[in-house]
Image (tube, rainbow, N blue to C red; front, side, top):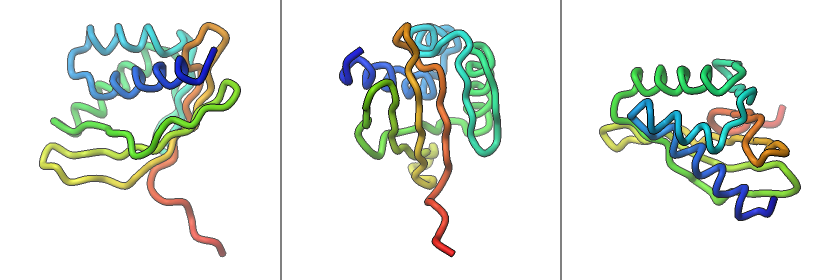
Length: 124
């Protein structure tokens, strides 16, 4: 799979996080997220497309009107990706910039996303 196709998959993934309608969100996840895909961030660890769909709905319910936006391009090599994003609240204020690392499986869908929130830690 080429880098442009992988970048499109990541763009669909971000669109799923911003989609308020459950059916449309599910359709996006079917295109970009593997059935057994693993999602890990500092607050949650889950596996499966349905679990991710439920998690996105919960996050949206807790932050009405908020959206995620890219803060970088999508870096791709082999079958792995990294990209920066931030939360934009309904009032237009922004959260910290965060970074995600991901892996694309043989079927061309994401099989793993590992997210880190905020800036990296300082050197000791």
